[in-house]
Length: 90
Image 1: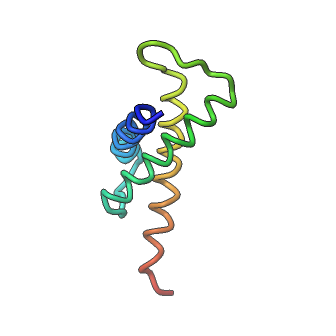
Image 2: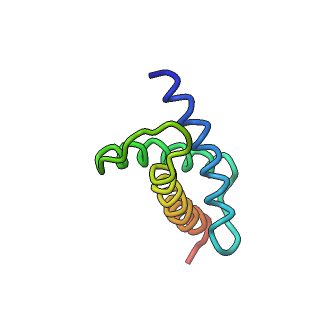
């Protein structure tokens, strides 16, 4: 259980950075927030993959990590959009 949590956090950190690189344009959110989005995407993606019946296999789980990466990219996009508008006054 603890090992799964630690590995999800490490994978989430990597996913956050990857998501930031995959998003087009300049991201206006700080790195720490990108990493938090990646960690959340890792946990949510793991849960969603389990609900979809994706099995945990030895080695690299392409489908599970693909789901997590898609969620991280979406999350970084949403958070960047919200964070960028925070300081803008109309």
